Image (cartoon, rainbow, N blue to C red):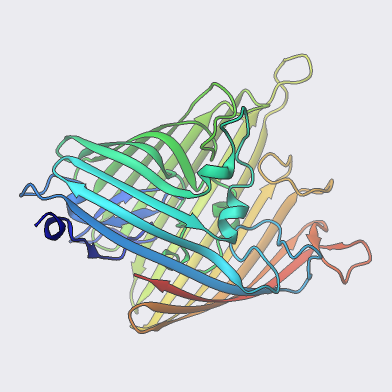
Length: 388
């Protein structure tokens, strides 16, 4: 009897990348996109049942980088992170619990995107670093303080951005530079309040800028507003502020829009701006350092199984605050991509994308160049993903 009571239903669990709909309540997550979740995760269900659902995602890929990096590691990305190598971009299994006034999610993960994304996890002390934290995509528990107001504690997707961690939830397979160089995940406490059916407010108190292991004794605060205008448009604002190692204060803000257009078109666009106050060698304030970026993506669903996408983007970090290039020249890039997606039944999706980036100076690994670096980077990637 106990087994039959707890027998789970296998479902898809989505992270980000979707507008609010009439039958789904939006909860902002980390890379900050709106998450589609069962409506009973936002409020206590009518009965007293405990529901546990399971899901899994396996994203396999192979990418060809025209620069052919000698180590096969592709710089400035977490997605399609290896050149000329059949590998797994992301694989995760998850269990999600929903009960009256209680919720939680545990998802464990692996893949080349995980190795790339968690490479900068701080290691301070013996029980620190990315050895454990990279395995936990999300691990949080939540309590409904009042109807529509949830408080969660643990590791969860961050409050910033419009692009998701799992490729299935994005219009493009690769991530834009603004997504790659803003936090995907956070560790701490968050409150999510469904103020009205149209307005969702989120506030975070977390360890810092994309780190589970603490890098100092200070904490960071984050906030997010998502406002749905009718059924077709969602406007978002998000911010994150905290003292990071080597800086007095790091401030980050972004605004974005998701909009359904006629003829099965969907638009996603955002602009991000960050600034950091750094002390000089005497502890006095030095000039403020800034970085900024933007992207716009258009996706066209040609039919229920086929879609094409196009993206344009730019990113500038003159002082190498967020992006360290390994050379004197910073990342000051513009680019674009085109992609083709095809659903193969209900469980499989095949995605192919070509992407180009052009930097003001030579920073991309390129065997063809005498210096070993060039101003351009071209990559083609194809992926077959299983989701259930």
